[in-house]
Amino acid sequence: MQRHLFPTNSWFIIFLIIIFVHAPSSASADDDERYLSCMKSFDCGNIKGVGYPLSGSDRPDYCGYPGFELGCSNQDPEITIMQLSYKLLGINNQSRTLNVSRTDYTENLCPTLLSNTSLNPNLLSSTSDHAEVTLYYGCPSPSPAGFSAQFTCNINDTGMMGYFTTVNLSVLSMSAPSLISYPTACNNSVKVPAHLSAIMPNLPDPNVAQLLEAISQGFELEWSANDSLCDTCKSSGGQCGYNQTTTSHFSPSLEMQHHLFPTMSWFIIFLIKTFVHAPSSAFANDDERYVNCSNSFDCGDIKGVGYPFWGSNRPDYCGYPELKLDCSDQDLEITIEKLTYKVLGIDNQTRTLSVARTDYAENICPTLILNTTWIPNLLNYTSDDQNITIYYGCPTQGAPTSTALPQFPCNINATEMTGYFTAFANLSDLGSSASNLTSYLASCKDSIKVPVRESAFQQILSTPTAAQLLGGLNQGFGLKWKASNNFCDTCQSSGGKCGYNQTTTAFTCYCKDQPQQFSCQQSPTDAQSPTNDQSSKPKICPPPTYTEAGSFLIEN
Image (cartoon, rainbow, N blue to C red; front, side, top):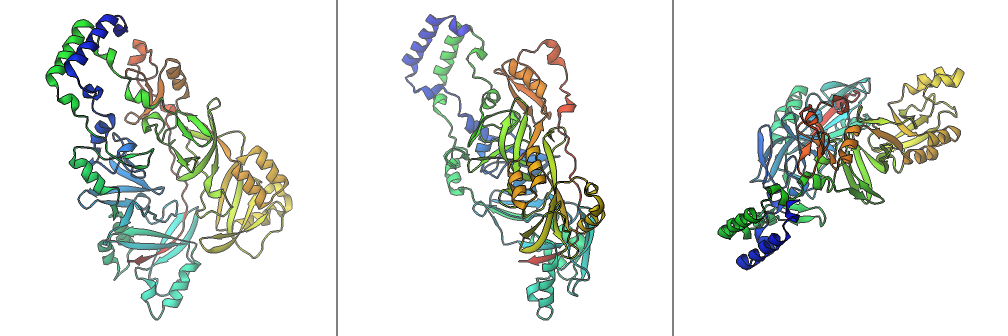
């Protein structure tokens, strides 16, 4: 409070500054915060000195393009592109290229989720050293002669034989018709890029180990992110960045004026110390993290969202890593274990999210058939949630006629199939027909569980139709979070802002002057206590494994 105790001296100092300096107010300001932040580089493992258009770690999101945020996992830099995670193998700023490899194909050809490689064409494009490998999963046996090799997968506890070829099927004149028709009988196909130079050795003698090695060497992507504007910015002494509000390039410029008056600056400092005798912190701004975590996330009808969530103008240190929010067409969204959910509501009193799967927004035939998963010790179902089991790819012969197992048609990836769903967790409750139903459903290709609210569950039980199921899914379900809740209550009651320390992977209380462990009014005992809230840290369990077998095809 010292600066309020000397009003006469304060006015005197202001008078002297005006008389001696005659400089604009910005002349004695610090460098722009964004300029300083965007000067920092991203370092992880062997990849160092990463700048624009990439952000992450010490580089806030405004230092890079949306979709170009990097993470560091066990000293491996990673980037997520269109919800797929890639290991960053190298960056070439001269050619403006990234070398990346899909993390889900690190160890084998059988990833948990079968997802195509997709890019934002306005930001990323393939280079000339590019080949696409098409892998086919769940293929019938035996295969045509052209499929000379095979691999097996274990996906969803279903073992299948698969086959692959490294030859473009369309160039095979004699056997092409049968080879082209064969892959259509496979359940799924996935395109995975690789360096053409790495794929070439596979062509004469197809080999699974060589293919996996080629995929692990990654592929090259060229970025386009207002590069000429960035060159102009840097040549003028600025730092390149991206304005999240105007969705355009901006350049945090260096404020040079205060370097032009070094003698006068020292004279002003002398006057301040002489007349006010205040500690330097008396004039300092509030801690940047405290200020940033005071911001709330607003999107559409949902406003005022704070801890444990982050995103937009709330940096990642304001919330748990897994609880990032996005705003898509004024719809609040969250991605949990690679599945995107629309956030229907947030209740801070009960600490619950109301969410609905976006892939079931319009029909019950999503492109990817994925189970709903959550994060134990961080997100869990509420007591109001009930599961519906949906079966896909069921045989037409021996189809049941039970009203407890309604049928629906699906067209997924241009494949017509028959599906069923049931609200009965235990089919034995259906009596004498249970055995036949269980046997029949075991022959379906896929089954998943999707949660709904109890009220919707009861409506589906009474009126088991596909329309009723879709309506229930869009009403969403509840997820209760546990994110050091007691610590956050203590922090907020002491005037602090709750956050998360990415380095120590523990809760942090951001105070006006500096971060504390739990409270802005800590006692010496508290200050010395270790941050060891292991029970509140999320423990991410590995996703369930499932199997299929496949084929792959190279296309230049």
